[in-house]
Image (cartoon, rainbow, N blue to C red; front, side):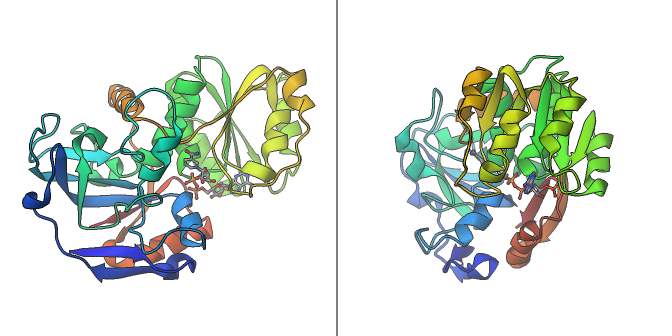
Length: 336
Ligand SMILES: NC(=O)c1ccc[n+]([C@@H]2O[C@H](COP(=O)([O-])OP(=O)(O)OC[C@H]3O[C@@H](n4cnc5c(N)ncnc54)[C@H](OP(=O)(O)O)[C@@H]3O)[C@@H](O)[C@H]2O)c1
């Protein structure tokens, strides 16, 4: 089979196509399934790992993929040959809170990922896809969508009428926009691009702010909320945005820390958290049980992922370069 390996920490150039032995049904252990991968999607994480000299190599990149079950091992009861499935980001995180032992299973980081023609996974890592989602659409869900879902609903308990602040228009934030509107929330979204702000408005964003031309965007957010602040922030920026996100949040509001787009080391005034009694929590993707709840909500509300561009398998590094350019709105997909 053809598969990609990350072979050096040189960004997209480090992704190389290699031949590996094609797994067959005979290779399956108890409760495993063999998947023919049809589509995968890219996340900022994949770019970060491709540049990280501490990342173990060679490794098959990407956490997110969807495909068809083509063989099952003994004792498999949850999936059957012919089922359309996606794999959870952490194959071993079934339910309950995040635990340290899940880290090593993270696809495309701790263990081999989905940018490969065939993949063996435990059946417990798989969620069955609703008929209305294509493989390309389903491949966008495991990391970005589940993270946004976990932040807003599992951790945030988002209620109709509350206000959500979203940063930028990448994968996580665009799912955040769709989920927040689904829940009847008001959305304030920041972007560096006026064209992307307009797209977000067309998707239901109530207010948008250009964070490049309005560097003090937190003040603008404050004013847009009538000097009350937002109830929730889906914080994907990290070091460079955290203090402004805190300053944008109302008393007893909630900030879900997920991202590091602007780096890791921040100087933050802790009184912003204490004085306003903010709830700040880290979110690292989510469990299989959360994935299933999210799929149920998406099906009920007919939510379809926003795919910016689709690249063929052979041009996967170009897809990663496109993500690196920051030109995208929503998700980038690779088909096999
Ligand atoms: N903890 C988790 O479980 C988890 C899961 C998924 C992602 N993440 C993290 O979340 C972040 C976003 O991931 P992603 O895959 O959604 O990224 P992405 O699709 O590559 O999104 C990039 C977008 O972020 C926006 N952005 C960049 N710098 C910004 C800034 N200073 N302020 C506001 N927006 C900014 C830009 O939007 P505009 O072009 O509109 O300006 C850019 O296009 C990453 O740091 C990723 O590692 C964490």
